[in-house]
Length: 114
Length: 114
Figure 1 (tube, each protein chain N blue to C red):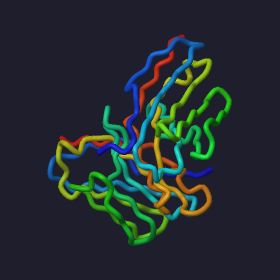
Figure 2 (cartoon, each protein chain N blue to C red):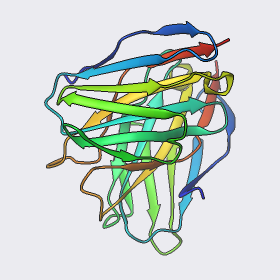
Figure 3 (cartoon, each protein chain N blue to C red):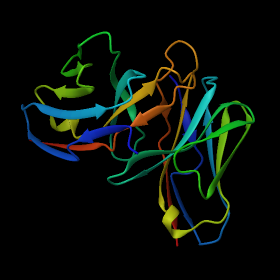
């Protein structure tokens, strides 16, 4: 059973547009929600993360919106650039896990056209 | 900077061979993880380890085993490789305290089993 559901599987956005990727979960024990970015030929790298005590976190052009009651969170990329073309994974961690195990979504392949 | 290295970027093996994938991290992290990444399926956890000689099964451990004899090194073993184990394999590490949850990934090993 997939713990974190991510959509869409692929996304094509024009340069300058807004990219939006959505994730949903059921486990109310999740307490940390990171997003990872993966470029071709590389391993994923942490992009931005949020804890459920805030509804939004912004870092540059990247924003996480978090809706605790709906158990949903999303990544918004403002002014999308061709260099943002990558695969994005949302994830969640169980607060009961001291091992830092993350449950990943299936990923979204983002293509930004120049 | 945290560095996670994997022994090979590309590997080609034959069905039935025993395959070793090696991972080394240089940040004294307690936790180490092995994932496989397949298109449309995201990152699936195979095994993880929270200490030397300790291991836990992930979501898809069948056909794999692991070894952690030293804190910095975590090996994934395919006892008898099969074609359905053709995949990208990613190693990651994280610490238990502080920013637990942030995982640092290696570049991956693309394994082809013929």
